[in-house]
Structures are given as C-alpha cells and as structure tokens.
Length: 78
Image 1 (tube, rainbow, N blue to C red):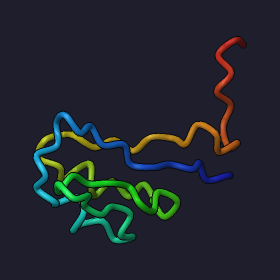
Image 2 (cartoon, helix red, strand yellow):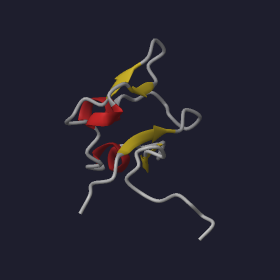
Image 3 (cartoon, rainbow, N blue to C red):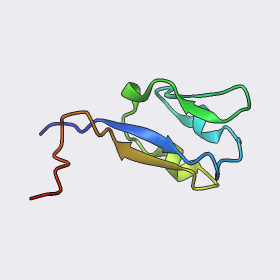
Image 4 (cartoon, one colour):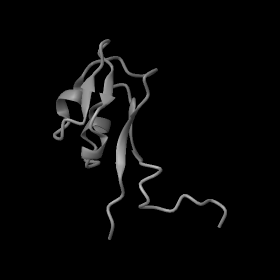
C-alpha cells in the first residue's frame, strides 16, 4: 500500500493566530509568518497525524492530498 502525500491546508480567514497548531505539530511542519499566521514551511514532513486539525479551536486546518504527488488518480472522467 502506497502512502498518499498530504499537506495541511490552512483557511487564513478562519485562523485567529493562536499558534496551537504550530506548537503541537510533532514534525514542525508549521511556522508563523510575520503576522503570526501559520505557514506550512515543511509540508513534505506532514504525517497526517491530525493533531493540528483536532486541536484547532477555529476549525481552520484540513489535511489535504497533494494534487501532483502522483500517488492517486484525480481523473474524474472515468
């Protein structure tokens, strides 16, 4: 079974810059930008553990598949 490449997707309109996601990530995928918003600076390190999504009080984070990873079929014409 092939592991699917994923990355955290952050809805910046919902994010309140609490930094919980940044602090809880065991792989240090996220870091704050100049204004405090989380950025996925190491998305390839994301293990899809879900800690960031389950602890975000604003429901601003989703774990999403990487579209061009080649590990899944995104052809909707079948």
